[in-house]
Image (tube, rainbow, N blue to C red; front, side, top):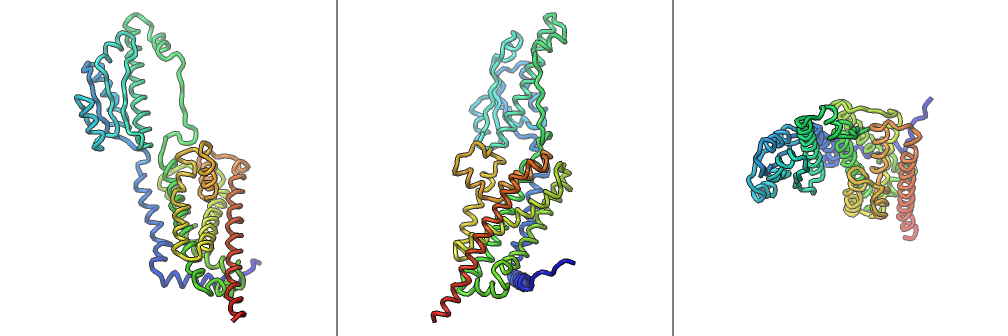
Length: 395
């Protein structure tokens, strides 16, 4: 038979539920607001892949070959030629104004150089501050022009008497096949949406824990009263944070339902391990938020620490910039955040289908964060609960 929950846990749990019910703003932050953000992020990334990105073309050659090259660029799924500029200055104005994301410059001698077997230089100007867009434009234009130039070179060799098979081998002597292993469609649902959802949720979980613990710690007898109601510091804090943990775990499950259900993203790993590290992620964030509240000693300071620590979490998580190339400061900052270990585990299990033993170090570090932040939280709560009692005995 299963043992019932401790009475102190049930008392603090019900007490926190009543507090949430009497504070509409807190209830909105706990439930509807994260769900709305999950839906908004899903709507933004619903197409999965950016397509038909507007570009400008400056065709100074004006030959049949250059016009064919422009048609091939426009025919790619990623790009759409929306501006045909007569000069680089005109194209630059379109780029600066935001009308296009890139400018493709075709030099005057392109057609002649191709027919003579030379290699003309086509230049693509793009703003790499738009990291994702710049990468897509650069890759798509390079592939389109590579295909075009290979086709022209092959036709020229055939026209000079070469056998078609030999002409193809002469143009591309060693064919290279590129196969993305874990995201073959280059789908941004798996790449960005699956990382942004827990990133946003980490802020909510940590801030909620900091807010609820901070509201008690800033009162002189807050921690002592919580410990008295809970019967101990552990059961008091556990019962107080349990409603938030359950609510945010359901939100995280809802995000997975969107990704694996609505977007039909594949799942290649162990479902039980996925559930275990998802629950551990929520618990680690709660312990981190509670610890920050105890360190700050009041609500505003706790929320400030939460924002400073978790705000730039996505940049340190290793999704957009590899952690192996980060400096020591950034590497430590990212390692202290539960999000980093969670996303590493998620990448291993959801995308790569890695064996469980491969994910054990990251899972161990996530559990270590729970132990570390939880221990500091319990120590500070126990010390704070003793202060009013000592003051009362002195008085």
